[in-house]
Length: 327
Figure 1: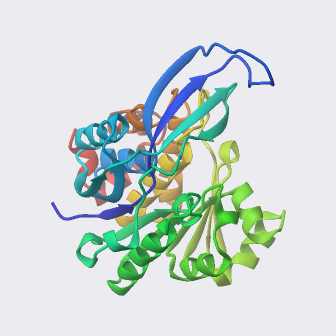
Figure 2: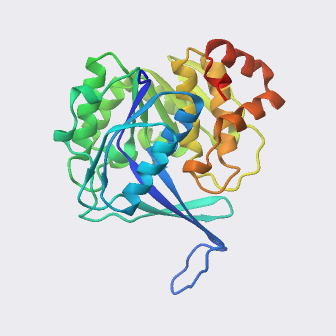
Figure 3: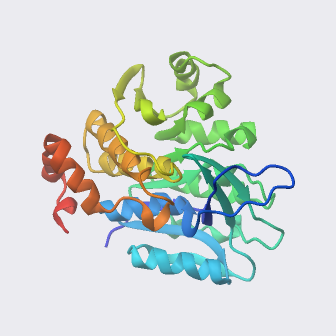
């Protein structure tokens, strides 16, 4: 099957703890629930694959039980893992603390954690209509040239005329400034939330921040606003979509699910307005379950929602792509 999108790096295992309260010094807390799921770009991969995109992953994982868990999940989702490299060492793991719909992260990384390195990236690994990258890898929190590896992939994709999709991530302010500017200039779609937009521009007003940022980004800017919906900023034109009404259990992975749905619509040629509506729906549905990864919306759940609340959008998607009919 022809690859639609190659996802670069940021595979991680998230261990979710549903807490009755957030930890305080000297406190002992018993979680109400503990679950393990793929996280990071794994969330994007799961939803993109379920919607019908052919997804390839390029990354390194450790030869431990967490790495094996990632492989098992991605295999079940039909992901191309030919360039998922297994090396001696530890797979990235993160604790996700959840309380009343709010989340905090504790990274469990060490010197033994394996990451992408520049010598791993080869031209034939980067293929399809687009690549997808995360600011988590460009921030290079482990200090081992992972940012150089990801930028090498970006340069190859640009040379091949592929779309470059970039999720800024909460660590965007830790990305080396010159590197960030180079990536933004080559970016076709920049995904970020309100906090990340403020970090990047130092401006509180959304529209003033977008005006400040627009000349640095090579394509469109997509701003996720949680329960206030989302905005697409396309060369001075603003497109808005409202969030769906949902019962939020856990917002973890919702932004990644949103990005995957937006990517699906964009690559299938759906209008930006309808694509934004689809992304808001999928992102909203993602908040209604505990945990990300395998617990993110299935294609059937997305279709069921569209059948009940937006048959016009379902008809548009079905007309442009047969993927949604393959149940």
